[in-house]
Length: 593
Image 1 (spheres, helix red, strand yellow):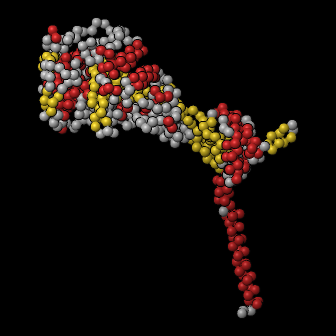
Image 2 (cartoon, helix red, strand yellow):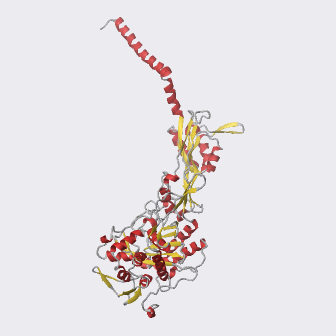
Image 3 (tube, one colour):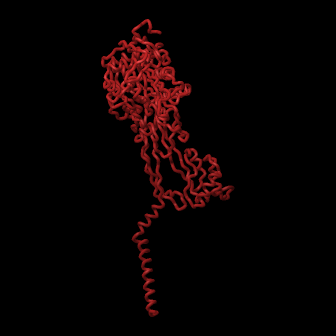
């Protein structure tokens, strides 16, 4: 064992060393690092809240609001501070605590007192100083809560998206999810313009959770998003949506869509889709949320016959009065072809083939034209490519890369719209082109984006109009299609009182992707009016109507209603005398049989 004095000296040295360490740390804290320690404490007192940006408003062409953002508040509670809640009654202080706070808040927030009390007591037991008491509270409710002067109550500002027009424009306008992200339609398409830039609120909070009024508080204001104005007319959209719903239900159809466009501009005036959903209640929305006229592809059928006719006339292979002898059956590519109704040998004109929607007549006339030429016209009319309107999820449809890729009977089926697929919007563009003297206009749904000065600036668009067919060809096709809507055609139900109409029916075999086979039909009618000076194109499509319904009787009445409404809304004067129709048969005596 060592000497006692030596051990004592060693102990003293060790103690002095320890004390020196404490002294150095104290000097560092109080002197050298005082600033950083103070800064750290200050940082803990500072709180940062994100100020959400006001999302831009979406309106129709006349300024009717389709989507808007409204201020809301999330009510937050500090259970420790709220436990000290008291009131003065008769000059005396009455302690109310969490139970009293819950009783006062419940009627203002529209919640059960027991639920608020349970939330607060649970937070208090965990010593939690932050708990949500209510979300999406209106500004009026929040002001009423503030008037209670309950300690520890604060709020977070938020924004909720609302859609005043509900289901009628939902697939087109889209929606914004609870996470603030756009889910489709114009909301997603114009996200960069609509979203804005969030701000920040920084404030200093005391240990009891209260904001220090004289503290280091600052605000960086949020920058609101830009407003977006659409080409859509809300009244026409509403009318089209309801007319479509009624007809789909009447025919026991699976779904349907309507596209209405302006002939001279290519602007979409209405784009209805059914079934739809309520963007104000996405929890009840069905599985399919896309805009059918731009997203859903189908074999268009006989409405595509107008492209075959356009090519034949434009290239000089035929005229509207060219004779076409149609037999009872026709065999091509090793398989038989027939028309929708059995008949003997018919002596038709090309105009008659279109008016009576003869598949065999279309083949007999169309095979004079090389496959490459037909494919070129289909491409120029816009098939196999997106319209360029910019809507998310838009399909380009399905079209072979070249006419040489049409093998076997597809060489013939494409002439009457089978063996290819398109959207309703693409088909509407075909008829807009014919109605516009052969010029295809770029399709659009956005009219302008807010310029920050209360006005709108047209979006940048480098697309150009395309002269697809000669004006004379377009005029001849228009006159041919007027016969389709006559008593002798397939769509007298599409007539519009007081106006001349040019259009085409279609009853196409419908491929069911779930069954992986053909099942039912796609019934459609597309047309424009007034035929002598076209202003509006309306395309109506109904999927799988009961009894394999045909385009004329199924879609024609919807077209008539919507076109009549659109023309009257625009105050278009009634039509004058229509030009005499082309003969439909080379045998006048049998023409009206």
